[in-house]
Amino acid sequence: MIRGAAITALSAVVVLGALAEPGRAAVGPTDPPSVGSPAWADTADVTEHLGQLLPLDTTFLDANGNRRALRSLFDGVHPVVLVLAYYECPQLCSLVLDGAVRAMRQLEPQGWSLRRQYRAATISFDATERIDQAARKQASVLSTLGHNDPALWPFFVGNDASVRALTERLGFRFLRDPNTGALAHPAVVFVLTPEGRISRYLYGIDYPARDLQLALLEASNGKTGSFRDKVMMRCFRYDPASRRYGLFVARFMEIGGALILAIVVALLAVFLRHELRRSAGGQP
Image (cartoon, rainbow, N blue to C red; front, side, top):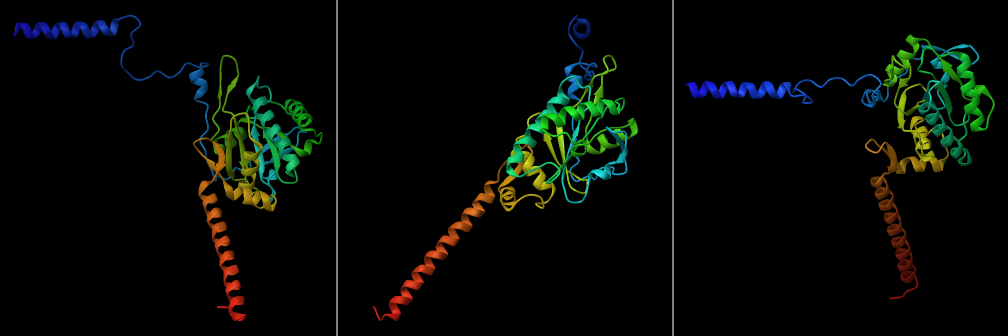
């Protein structure tokens, strides 16, 4: 009895000593990351809401101070590239915009022109920003794209309610550091259908022109683009794991099977024609 009590007491001392040991954390719930830390910034992420309709009656101010509803961006014909960016972002937002511009410029020689085949818009998710900031960023981006018409690519600002309505529908989560005022946010571009539904999310700061083209084709359901573009759309498929478009092997097998069948049918036709001619000529 005495020996058992001693062992129990000793075990309690060991446990208490382990809990009190400096630098050794007690087992328990994981503490949330501290504000401003890399782990905290990583919680700014995207939850995809594919197929969701944007809140089209939500209004924003364009760089000229005109109030416009989101529905003004959609004409039922052209897909839309939407970039969320705050205009005083020290780095990431500019990289996202640069990546979008780079892909757009690469598409132009292939017959994909902004405004003709698709539309673009940028909206700040910082509700404290002003239209003069939007105008400066717009001028810079259009200059890089090689254009100077503000109507080609409108830039907007909004109040807290409109920004929240849009970002929540897109599944775009951002965080403000209370110490510096900087915003932590993901790097993503949205491709929307001509009716204003979310069709595709393109991640990162570098968007291959082919991926943007395929996303636009997908968003328009093949209504935008040439016959060659539509054929290409059937041969590539979006891979959620890599977040890129890749060759659709099954489709190539279908095409290959169809080609083989066509060749076999053609050979049979030639053979039958030859046999008919021989029979008509009386040859054995």
